Amino acid sequence: MRRNHLAAFLLLIAVGIFAIGIRRGDVPSGVIDATSVRLVQTAQTSGTDQLLQAVSPVSESVVWVSGHGGTFAVTSNGGESWRARVMPGADTLQFRDVDAFDARTAFMLSAGTGKLSRIYKTVDGGDTWALQFQNEHPDGFLDCMAFWDAETGVAYGDAVDGELFILRTEDGGESWTRVPAGGLPAAQEGEGGFAASGTCVDVGAQGRGWIATGNGARSRVLLTEDFGQTWRAAENPVAGGAAAGLTTVGFVGDDIGFAMGGVIGQDSVRVDNVTRTTDGGMSWQLAGRPRMAGPIYGATWIPGVPGPALFAVGPRGADYSLDGGLTWLLADTQTYWAVGFASPTAGWAVGPGGRITRFSLQPS
Image (cartoon, rainbow, N blue to C red; front, side, top):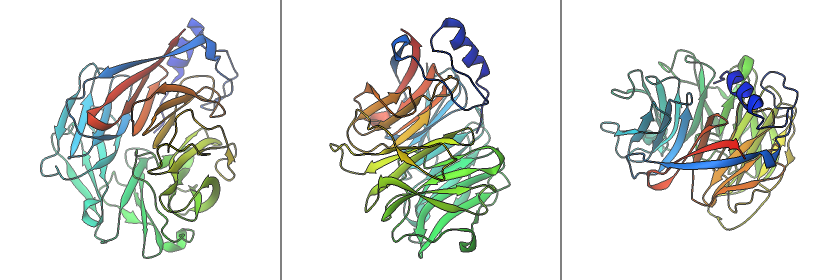
């Protein structure tokens, strides 16, 4: 989902936070002066002690999060207060992705083997939920989803029966249809994804989309240009293999993107796990290693700034980059699973024990 960050951008320029760069559309084109900003973090009270694994900022005020135990939470005041709830009859589900459109409309995806993988939708702020999809394949496992608009979306899951598993909807989730094998590249043995942060899928303008894959012999990014009807694959230099590969992907504009990951479970090891592209995902190059060790579970662009700012989280903490991932600064050492920003001054990272932290770039 794309949002207009012009007002935030003008405000930042007015107060002199950033070194000015030429801006064209949504594509970052300057480099932020690191000495002119500081990162402020504020712990927020979520109202739950469940592991939170996904976050979807609609605006600086409205944010949704989701997690284990059938839990979700919503704020309408930027996190000053959260209302946490458990979906009735779903307390055994792990909601590892949430995509929200406003304070009332949101989709949630639960990850798990077979029928534990589901997609729900609410149009009344979470008072009621409609089950839209339930995976009937005993080996199926959903990982993440993303939406071009309120009607058109895509969901990704681990390969089954030797074929990649991608779902599409064109009617707001009333029906989900699996993309046929003829529209997909061949799957690698064991290839799937990691349902870590709900960010292994991203979508862009004019039907473009990207999926980060893992657990195959080689890491790959899948690309579409027709709203998910057909896909092709591009190899990525992050090391693949069992429990390794890509966990998160994100684009700004048509060409500039990141893909990150690592080795799941090796939390004390630092590896080359950040890559970037400038050609829409057709080719990928290694960027800088984060300060934190271990894999990256989720990452995001920080919107509304004239430079390529990134924020990444994982089991060993959180880092941010002001130059598109070439160099990194430490943000926190607490464990986080997912992160999302609505503007430079409004970002949220979530993690175990109901952890929600608000991050904000401020003048130094």
